[in-house]
Length: 259
Image (tube, helix red, strand yellow):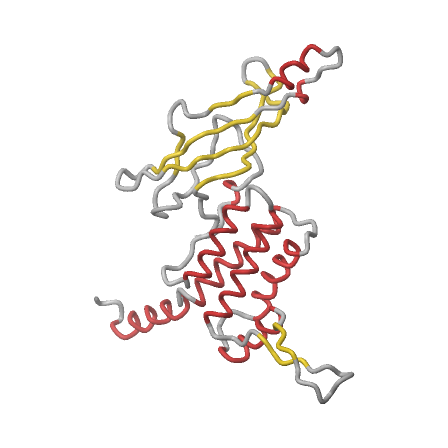
């Protein structure tokens, strides 16, 4: 499965809330619970309507809505909080008019943006799921947690984390233990494990994560690209996709497809 870009926009129409994947069962889709969408306008916003220069884009609204997994055996409930944005919308009957669209600021529990293999190490999974939750609040923090998950992936493969650094001015003094940069750990991982996933794939994730960690500007598209890359990498590393496909090829070849 690839990242469904249409689900992860910054905002969406009130009557077109995306059918996110259920964060619990990872099989069902979420749909809005009837009459659960609530929008409210604070007094300072409604009072401003009396101003002579008032424009529709002055409106401030908060919203909440509940979604539920469509599979009866699951029924997970996801709560969404956020604000609205006033935009010019095309109405089939009256033409162009102003209306509000929903802009999520938090989802709990957060729907998964990418699919993780069943055997994903727990600490890697925890960091990635934290990234899902932060996606709606802070793209940079979300990317930073994605970077953390790559660190935890290196831990899973027992890639060395630290080194002894000597003081050049005091060559006889005992060195201090300092952490390896993730870039070095990735190179050591590739050299030791020789995975089918190339080093540049993991370095691409590191670069996106660095932007978030250092507070640099990060776009939604770049982060979604990182999730797409990471999903494929984990499917290869943990899910052993290529090995499974090779096994199926051998099976078909050996039996000539008669099974």
